[in-house]
Length: 175
Image (cartoon, rainbow, N blue to C red; front, side, top):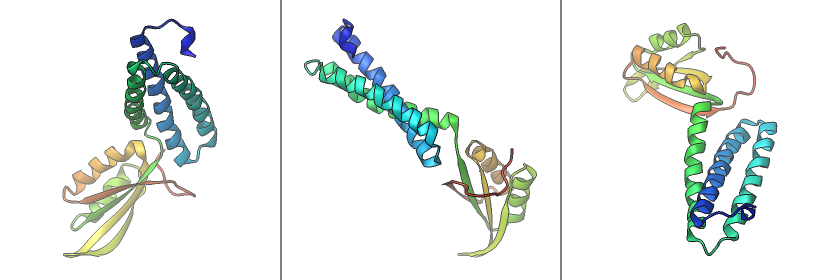
């Protein structure tokens, strides 16, 4: 595809690099939406990702005598993964479940989370050193840092675990 343009070996490598960055960034996003179950977006991203890949790989195979072409392909693959991760971080799609274990301030943690408009479930537990409170909260991914800050303010010693979740039905999510 790129063969129709007269490009220097360096320009060809740069074009392949950029195609591969786009391809891999789309691939990273496609996998994110695949896990989230968003079929239309997965189809759209997969279509364009594969079309870009065909152009990139055809260009590399048409220029095997140009080491810069396959270096551009490999560098584009690596860079595209990182770019895709950066885009995914900015989009912050999905939900996370926070599990907080507090030995002394469980009620304060739960109340701080609730006061900020999030749902929190407080449970009694028993840890290595005795009674603990376990506070569960499911929040939008973009809100995780805010909720973690609230938790740390209520109990700087709290243990916080964060897991990716896919809500199935109901629940309370801050709008």
